[in-house]
Image (cartoon, rainbow, N blue to C red; front, side, top):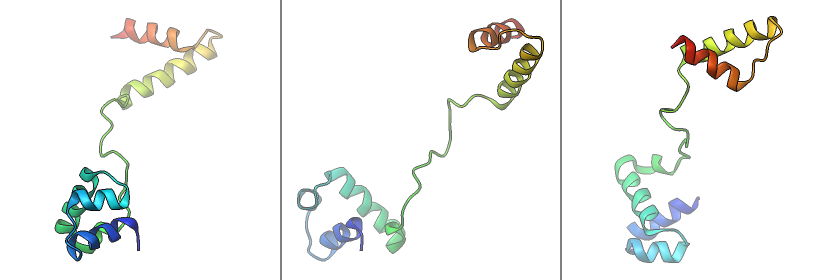
Amino acid sequence: MGKNHVIILAITQQKLSYRQAAKQYGVSKSWVHKIHKRYLHEGTDAFRAQSRKPHTSPRRTPEAVRERVLELRKELTTAGLDAGPHTLAEHLAREH
């Protein structure tokens, strides 16, 4: 039985407040609230490990730019030229 499960039991069966449960188990009150809310919505499935992977990557380089960088790098190295980040950035700036 994991810590989150024990905290939920303390809230639901022992009738501890979020503040009391947080203090007793060494976690933040907001965390206790979050797992209790998850428990109310998902039931016992809330105790399974949750993925921490983000759903999106807004700062990710677009695929078209990534492919162009790889093409440029190959072209420049084949020609015996520098293919470092500054050179690639300069070439990409000229194209766009």
